[in-house]
Length: 349
Image (cartoon, rainbow, N blue to C red; front, top):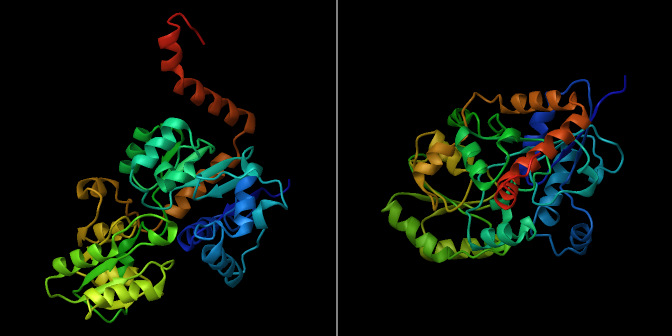
C-alpha cells in the first residue's frame, strides 16, 4: 500500500510551530509543508506584494520559509507536487482551490478577533471572510474537522454558526502546557508586562499613545516592560513608548512566554498570549471580557494537544471520502432546515 500523503499549511511562526508539532505524531506517512497560500485573484495579489502585511507574503512568508529550512522539513510550495490524502491548516479565511476536494482539518491558532461592524457586514452580505480577519474563523465550512482550544471556544464557534458536529475539543499546541514557562532564565521578575499588537501594520485602528498611558497608570510606578509584536515597526513603537514611559524596557525578538511567567500583571488588547497569563493565574487586562476569557482559556493538558489533533487526523484519513461528502451535505441540509420549514411547512427531505 502507498504511504498516505499529508500537507501542513503553515503561516505565522505560531501556526508553523503548531503544524510542526502535529506532524511529529505521524511516522508512516509522507509529509510536506508549505507557507500559507491562496488561489485565483488572492494568489495574484499576493505575488504583487500588496498582501505582504499578511501571512500570504512579506516577513511572515520569509519567517515560515526560514523555519522550514532550519528544521529540514520537506516542502511542497503551495501543495502542487502531490495529491494529498489529508491537509492541516490553521486558517480558513482563504481556502486554496487545490485543497477543497481533500480531507481538511482546521486547527484553531489562538484568539479570534472581536465581532465588530465589519464582521456583521461580512456575515450578512456573504462578503469575503478575510475582510473581517480571524473573527470569521470556522465560517467557511470548507473542512471536515475543526480542532479547538476548549469547550468554551466550541460554544463560541457554535454560536457563530459553525457546525458543532465538526468541532473536536483537543486543546491547541503552544498554549496547552503554560506551566512549563515558569522555568526560565529571563532576568526580570515582578513587573508589569505590556504585550502590544501589529494592528497598525495590518491596517487596523489602534490609539497606541492612549494604550501606553493606560499601561503607565496600571503600573503605578512598578517596572514596565513592553514586548512588541514581531511584525511591528520597531522605530515608531520604541519612540512612542520612550516618549510616554521613558523608564520602560522594550523587547521584540525575545520570546514572550518567560516574560509572562515572571510578570505580576499582563496588559494586552487583543492577543492570544492573554491565555498564558490566565492559565498562570496572573492579573490580566484585556479589551475582552475577563469572564469570557476565563471560560475560553485553552485546556491545560500537559502538552498533548498536538497528539490529540494527530489522532483526529489518523481517524479522518481512514474515512471514505464519499461518506465525508455525504456528511457535509447533511450538515448543509440541516443548516437550511428552518428556512425550508418556514417557507414550505409540508416540505419533506
